[in-house]
Image (cartoon, rainbow, N blue to C red; front, side, top):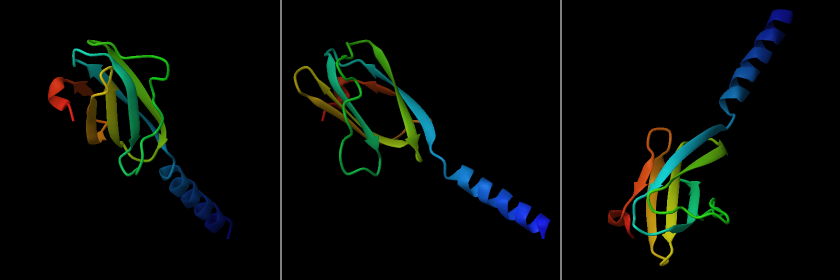
Length: 109
């Protein structure tokens, strides 16, 4: 009986550890020729944009910003950037575990 209890506890620990959220990051490089003033990153299944991850900072042309995404169960995210002229650049369903982003004028919405 003691072995059965131990086995049940071990299986429960394994199942609960599989459900834990992961941390991800994505490097975003601005090659638009404009300053990026807002950067929103939301889970790919979200219906709305999360808060601006730049806060009071900006992403100057030619610079790269690493965005750390903590506590998510999937590496798929939507990314929207808005530049100083209020032009937007949107990337849908980006697998941040395998892909970083380089934003150019070709990505203009």
